[in-house]
Image (cartoon, rainbow, N blue to C red; front, top):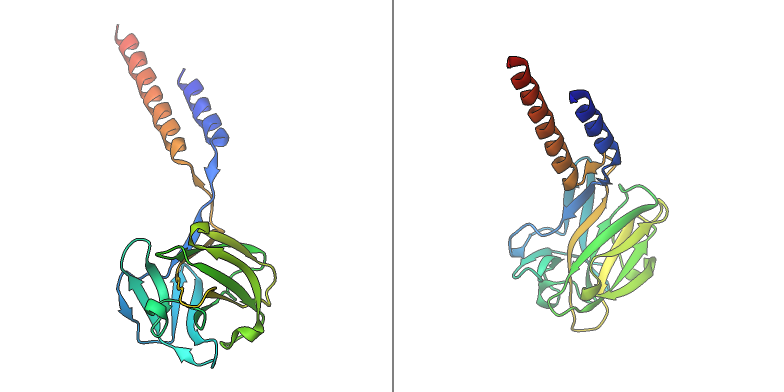
Length: 212
């Protein structure tokens, strides 16, 4: 009986679905104010993403601003931007050169009023104007999160801009699938617990029977 329970545990292990782990870079550091820098590195594990504040008209570097007001208005913006956020001119570029080609990136944008935004890709290193970017898509805050794929290793940057003058958004987070071993679904641990309890009950009954 004990052997049967162990066999069931092994079978449950292989039949239970697994959830793939993800790596997430949160660009909201929990504070509200000027970060005092024009670029900031965000590291998870061995992978670093660097965000840059840039004026799209002049190409000038801008101070990054971290906004943390309400749950729907948190993330990375620029100091001179509308409401210290990302607008049509004062933008945030994100260096994704350390993310492998063909990786699906899930990007979370924060917008208090579900304002619309564009995202662009750039094929050359360094910050600059959007003339070097290719429009990837247009969304609004209700589309969160949205997915994009780094189709090749030459797309080193993505940029987020507001679509309409006077509107603004924040860069909240970016996630990619993890290369680590997949993690079990929570239900798997319930199966394991039941199996262990079953083994314990069987063992106790056997001991009781042997004592009779």
